[in-house]
Image 1: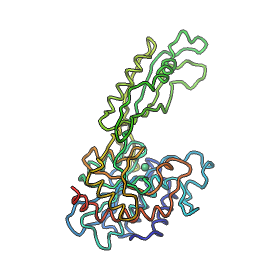
Image 2 (image 1 turned 30 degrees about the vertical axis):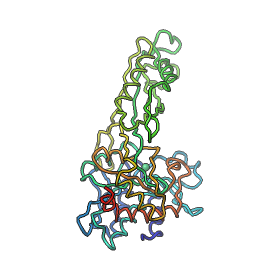
Image 3 (image 1 turned 45 degrees about the vertical axis):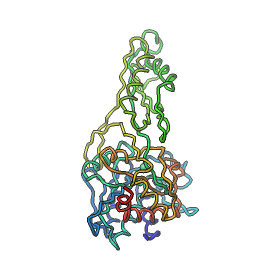
Image 4 (image 1 turned 180 degrees about the vertical axis):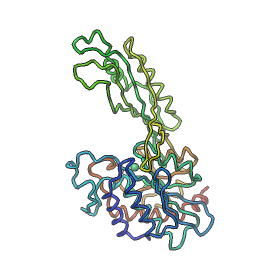
Length: 389
Ligand SMILES: [Zn+2]
């Protein structure tokens, strides 16, 4: 059984080390140093700065790869937090701060749980990976998924210590409307794309969505809006609207793009040009690598009776956690691995409803339970999944 106290202390140091996407160097070095102190056989970073630690197994059983990420979302206005976002303070038997559940709680748990396997050695190799830039497009996961041999994976994202088996995908779709800019005192002589955009937004709810028996319905939300102007007295010539589309398995991102394009073409005023794309952007990792990254993240789902899901759920139940397996509301890097042939099951401490909020905190008791389950998964998931198959 892994010790709780060193894990809590590690989690607090993780929270005290900010690691926005592309700025994960300090945190990566902290995690590598911890792995070395704990006695991992290998610990280092790859070309984009993802941490990979290895614990060699005693035999040649299939390996189990633990996965989380290093980066977190912005904290916003620190004065809105009940406790300092980078304090890692303990109140009410909980650790508070940005990343407590997404992602430093799950990360601390995986690093320390895997280390406890060093005493007896697991039947196969156990790898602990913490990737870069999950929150902005999955640079680390996309790289790692193709560099390592696909295997069983435990995706550590907050799940209240319950096994997860998939989630909807996420695609950003950019709606670009091009009109004609003029002085705002004579709007009729221009072509204001915001008028067409207004019609587009008013009818967005009508766009056809796909119903999935287990993951619910796909959804679309307009999120970011920008024009080509910074002056309030000029009719803009161009407008860009980002739509966040959550697709279900079997619903291709291209299909979603096409349906938004149809709507935009239908509502645009005569003369307004329409471009609807799934953008890619060059993301620079902390090691200086530039990776062209698509805004499309696939959905993924393992069946409830999948051997890895059944095995993980029963191992969790044997440790006193819930034996049910559910799906996540949000998207994770698991989908990039799934797409590359891996078998990702999700499991992590913490309430997923607290992710990306100012109230982020994780119960120390939940961290303790997750340590036990993760250790068990590292030691037995491969063999148990084989038995279930
Ligand atoms: Zn996360």
